[in-house]
Image 1: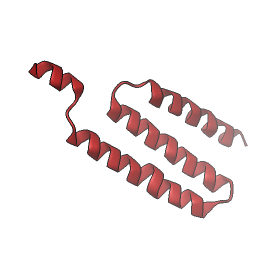
Image 2 (image 1 turned 45 degrees about the vertical axis):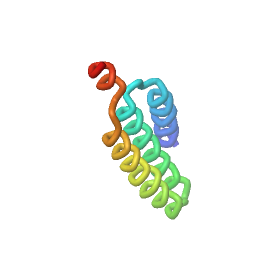
Image 3 (image 1 turned 180 degrees about the vertical axis):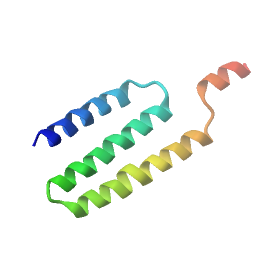
Length: 83
């Protein structure tokens, strides 16, 4: 029970930190960690099928797509240097 409460607290802190970060890549990585913690919590709540789906889609695939999209776009700081 204490472990589940600790995971929920870490998840909430991660979600808040993800919103505070100005760097998009850091925010996406923290959001992926939050999703992975959600998958662990689903497993502890006796829902292994939902946990596997959350880990595969939420933590892995969505994070990978966001990281790929961020890497393909220019950062605002680079645009300001060019001008």
